[in-house]
Length: 133
Image 1 (cartoon, rainbow, N blue to C red):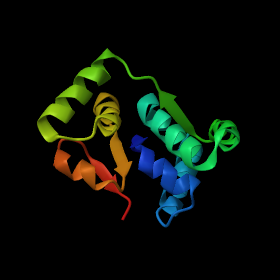
Image 2 (tube, rainbow, N blue to C red; image 1 turned 180 degrees about the vertical axis):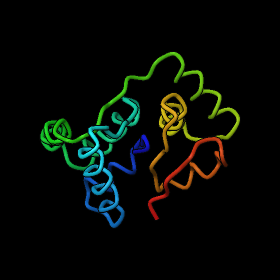
Image 3 (cartoon, helix red, strand yellow; image 1 turned 135 degrees about the vertical axis):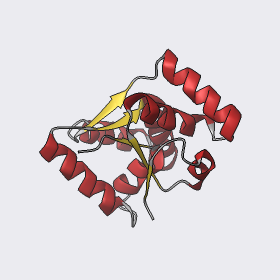
Image 4 (cartoon, rainbow, N blue to C red; image 1 turned 120 degrees about the horizontal axis):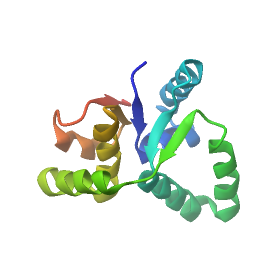
């Protein structure tokens, strides 16, 4: 199985049961069967938490954290290498800073990024992408 990195909007699609959330759900099921978790940068996880805290409140976020811990997904801390790649991607491709950490993690892990965020189109072929469209 290929390795996958979720960006914030991919996970939000799943959590909010948006149209493309079913595809993320399928990827999570495949990850569980293969014993190979999907990955997410801690920076993008923070973005998810912030957006849901703002719209749903603290108690919702607390319940969400408990639920996500049950998923075949691993939150990866951002390291020095990720910071370098994120800065480079932002400088060269003008990708939003938080998004650049998802791409940097995909580079580090030689993984495919999962997103529906059109900002990632700016990366061209720098990172392989599965588009949730």
